Image 1 (cartoon, one colour):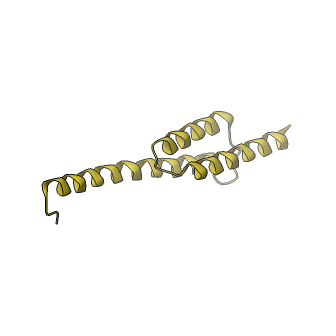
Image 2: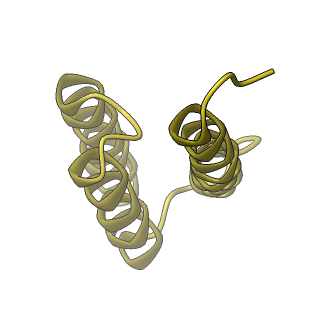
Image 3: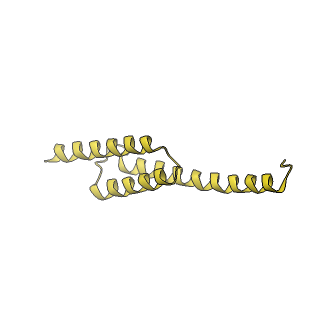
Length: 87
């Protein structure tokens, strides 16, 4: 329980922000499953949408900048591998 008005406000803000951040992370996980799901070949438009979502999450500090770069590199690698296999 908060002892001061400012501490109670910070507690409310933390609750709202953590819910918002959790929804963003859930959305990223669902998008990731859709892009690289069970043997599915990733499409360029899906990968672009995923990269955009990753960049937005990193910009807002929801995921770390290096983690975002790593995820994007893996996505681009999977996209390059799938296009090379079909060509």
